[in-house]
Length: 91
Image 1: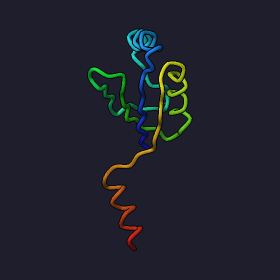
Image 2: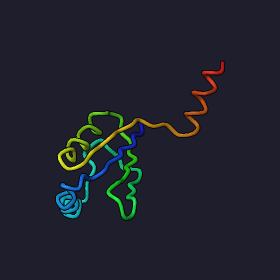
Image 3: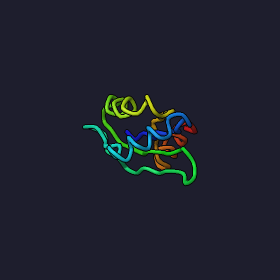
């Protein structure tokens, strides 16, 4: 399953979050594959699209950053999956 992890950095954690990112690079734990990570220029927001068979791997990554970031995590599907769900709803 794919997950979109959305984060923002509270102002009081900005320096600590940058230091942690620069030192560690936010590596993925075992069982979690990064499909892409984006940062909004000039802001404290970012997004990670990742994939995992086990939601515990997602939870592990979120827990590693939860002390520094405000994080929301959403399971996501692509257009093909959304179209299939819509077609089932119409049937």
